[in-house]
Image 1 (tube, helix red, strand yellow):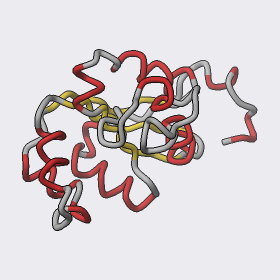
Image 2: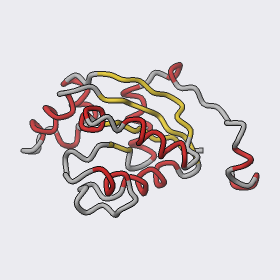
Image 3: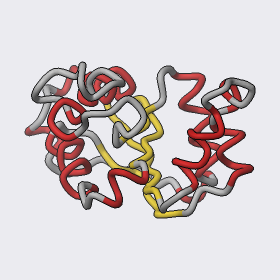
Length: 153
């Protein structure tokens, strides 16, 4: 099992798409094992986007991510990082394929609704920024045997 951090960004919250996006992850068979709504403070934004802090676009990014509440989640599942990123589609909603979350709901590069970790290392780092270990509730849904074969993980 693999874990990834998902942030439903301010545009997702403001457009009231949270339930639809979470539903798509659940319908795919991924487990939401931690979730909370919060207001991102500038310090947390700087830690999360550390690689971008010195770039010219960072002030706008920080203003966006701190401008409204977000929903942070940890999602667990087989190949969760790749599966979630495939479900999201291209970063720019205008380039995202129909049927992906961004392809269906976004028409912007920055206002692209959802952040997802891009690899195992970043997932571990990002999860630890938003959640303490005791806030994560890993579990095995009773319907798992009806979603994948026993030898698939």
